[in-house]
Image (cartoon, rainbow, N blue to C red; front, side, top):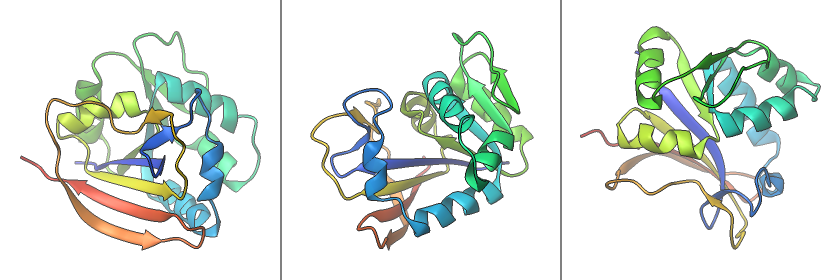
Length: 184
């Protein structure tokens, strides 16, 4: 069964997005050669990239207009957008999946041979984490306090304990954190 890995950049005060939608300027405080190498490594290791509707629309709009190695890889990577409201998914190599997210991800995990990644998509991830479908969280902790914005972790019915897999300081002052949710 494939692993589901969630990747996000988060501020010290827990936000993955600033005060307005797609306010990601703070990502520049952590980004550098180490995260560029991680981006390449993650793209090399993934079979499928999954988004919710909001993240899909933002990522498709951004990456389709970009050039370079990472842009080329994002634009050719196999992708799934899980949405019941999106009319169609036009970004290259993207499949639209309707229905309940937990069922869709469980099916995708059973079908895939390689790792499945979710970038962003905090609303999509919350019920997946609660259902025990997330196998690993990778968080780039940015050295900034935003003072407001969209929280990475949403309210859940109960706490989910995490096992630390790695904590690696970055030259930018950020920290790469890898956690594995405890099952059961």
